[in-house]
Length: 219
Image 1: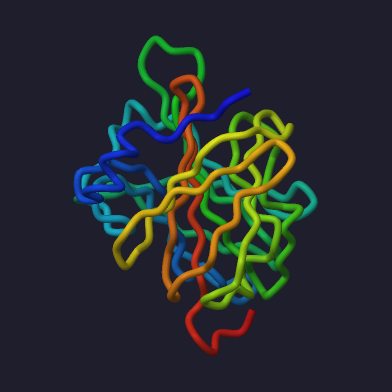
Image 2: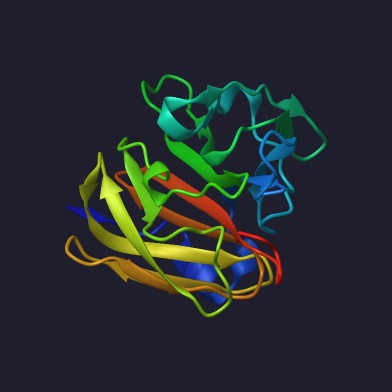
C-alpha cells in the first residue's frame, strides 16, 4: 500500500513559498503540568505563521488527547488569520488535533496534529491513535537536540505503510524522506524551532508538527 507525497510537494522542494499547508502548533510546546497553552490552527505558505483563516464550515472537529485516554475539549476562536484556543493539559504526552471536511463528503479530507508534552512526562506510545494515515516518531520529541536522528513510522489504520514524507522547517527549507513498511524514515533534527511533516493517501492528507526544544530547555 503506497502513501504519496502531499499535493504540490515538488513545488515545496523548488519554491517553499508557494506550498499551501495546514497545521496546528502549541505555545509552549513543553509546558509545566497544568500550565496554560495556546493552540493555533494555521494555514498558508509561511509555517508556523498563519496567513489564511481556515473556513469555519470546513472545520470538522477538534481534540486534545492525552495519557490513559484522557481528553480535554477546546473550542477555537476566530482571529484575523488563524483560529486559536487555550487549554491546561495535565502531565503527559498529548495530541492536539483538528480535522477538515468538505461539504457533501462523509469523512475528513485532512487531519493536523501537534505533539505537546506537559510536565516532562513524555511517552512516544501516546503519539498515535491508529486511525487513518499517521506519521509517528519512535523517540521522545521533548528531549531532542540538533543532530539527533528521529525514526518516523508511516502508518495506515495502525499498520506499517511505505511512502514519502515532506518536511518543512520553521526557519526555511524543505526536505523529503522515504519510509518502507519494514523500515522507518530517518529525520535528522535541525535547529531549535517548529517542524511540519506531511503525507497524503488517496486524496486525504495528514500533518504532524512538533518542536525541537531550545538549547538548555529541560525535557
